[in-house]
Image (cartoon, rainbow, N blue to C red; front, side, top):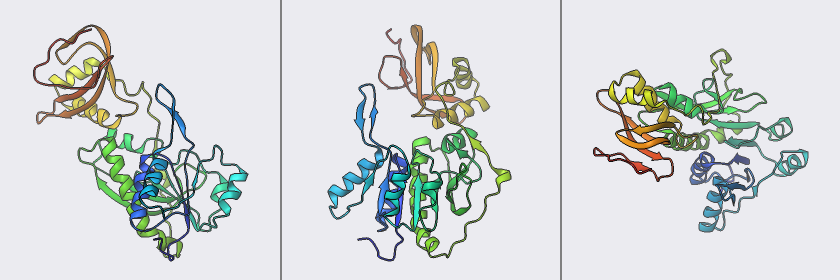
Length: 309
């Protein structure tokens, strides 16, 4: 049951990152008054209309617990009519976790205590579209989660709370899962005190801010000659390529063009997706899993034979 002493809030979020954070709140009995996510969209080659991850998560939980009746809102646009709909909830605060749309003043001005964002970096570093991917590519040892006040600038507002995480060998999916869960736990811990006025957000040091970009398919290309050099000679190039593979899978997905790859000979140039790699004790690159154009994903073994065209 929802605790009557908990603040009234609306949760904005769309993908798995948002669903994982929301799950931590629900586990603590902190239930949003409503959830806002993007509309169902066509997915895949067959363009099947598919609900976002957070909607699937909520519907599954409502099947398990019919008393968990949370309104689910999926507006195409955040216009004044939708703003009026939000006002009816009389929310203390909004919470945003990877919603997918920028909130403008007509929305940000609604809650009594503002809007808190969950961001997977230690702001002010790694603002923008790809904090997780850029963190992994840069090879930093420690990252974290920031709860911050959302304003009309990108990841710019004062910090409410932060928590650090050791990255180790985590890949993108693992790091996203870890940070979303920590973000949800951190929010559950601080939200009541924040609304009660016991926490004063601290201004970011904007001079230290760094901005990340959205990575494209072109950014995810790795030259086959660099791969072969990383496999045979190792060193910095092996470390950089391994980090890139951890960072850019599953999307946009690292890839190369080659007529031969790791002792496999194709007879002609083919596109090869590089799905998983590691670095040996000697700092050489070990390719562990690939997908050759027209084939299913495969694990690489010590004995590799010629691949049919």
